Length: 324
View 1 (cartoon, rainbow, N blue to C red):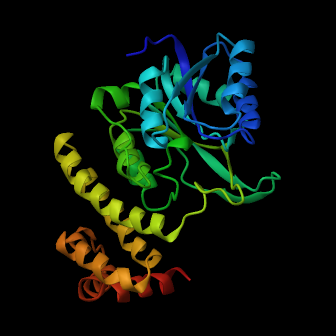
View 2 (view 1 turned 90 degrees about the vertical axis):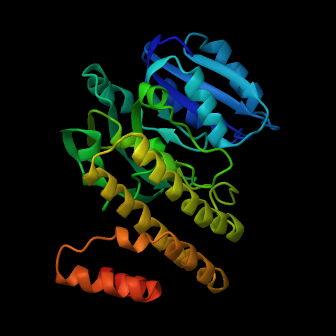
């Protein structure tokens, strides 16, 4: 395990990122703090990424830690980065994206208060820097991770993105948490547990992460086969989540909220599938008796739950009408 020598390690998996790496790197270097480490992991790139990283490493030897390995994908590369990171805290950054130059200066005060988890906000942009979407979400002061998850799970669409958190490294190491290799949307199975296992967390109203929608990017434009695998992997992640709930001895309320979160997310994945695949997917949901996880707090919700138990497609149709 790497020694703790820095305050924050920014972990950047790099795979054929020669077109975007400069902007990504400059955004971190502009944070200008000796307590910041940049952990670059070259995941088997075949373009000029290695040359670019070597040049940055030569100019910033005290800040940059550079590792090369064969291509194994983003999940395994992030796990590798966690092991190598020398920071007390970790932040994940994709090589297509970049940080606001004021992010570190803002979150540093919370790291100094020994907060376990610091959540910030994200905006989506095109390659020219035009804002496509500013993603909103709850803002709150000091809470436990379980309280924070309860606040976030119903309204924050980026709850499970690892890139919008500064995370105390020991949450991963003490709880033996890691990204599931070979899984689509590996964040879905991991981040809810990173949150609920945090002793303290805060969610701030600052857009610190710039997600760049790269036109034609294979990793950012899903094929149907990838969408289908993502839906099927979500079922496996639900099964594993049930085991984790028992393993970490979470309280009953948190366990129920986690089950609701996973169930709602999986129900919505039905609509991402073609009709020929929906029938089998619904069978898998029913086999797991997942609809029992949805709670009814009033008559209206009770009626919706009855419809859910009778016909899942009717339930999704009703849900769409209510939101429109």
